[in-house]
Image 1 (cartoon, one colour):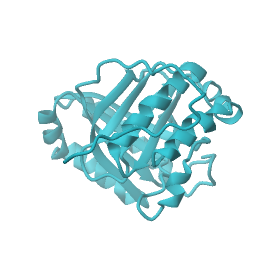
Image 2 (cartoon, helix red, strand yellow):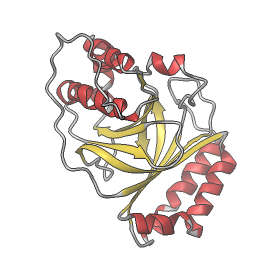
Image 3 (tube, one colour):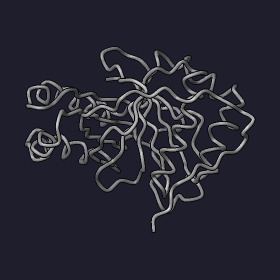
Length: 252
């Protein structure tokens, strides 16, 4: 007999509005994350020649990918900093997951699963993966679908982009607490977009959240100075056995 997943709520006196969700995207995604530079965390201040050449190579592949049937979008991201928000549940289970320190991400959006399968065997894609792996100390590659959406993420202009690598033993529990806490980001940071990715293949992470703000100033002060970020967001993550690993990026 299956048991229904329930949400464990702490600090119930804090009452944020329910997150505003729209219909999920039908797109398929390939998320490629790589660790190249051993930067002094949490700030990625410099880029090695290895990283610069990798970013340049990945960026140059965009025109090739845009010509492949089924590819909707292709974007390359370079890490800016790791913001406050890494959950202590991750630290307590560090032997069960991988501590996210990805300084390069490539996100490919594809229209159908049929085209996704063809792209995975396409020489352009396999060459991209081979090149990234040859330059990195660790890579995490997964296909994914969109399971929740506040709004589409605008990749046509620069900004500060989040990839939040969640670790949870129960994905349903992760989704429930993400929905419960996402209203905080809508209200406190005026977040109006988010594409929540559910990995389809073997992944170290239960879900990966992707969203955008115009600048660091739209998000960082709230994470530092709003006490409710801990009491409403992080404490509820922990109560539901969920750990977040956020990294902020810029478009390349």
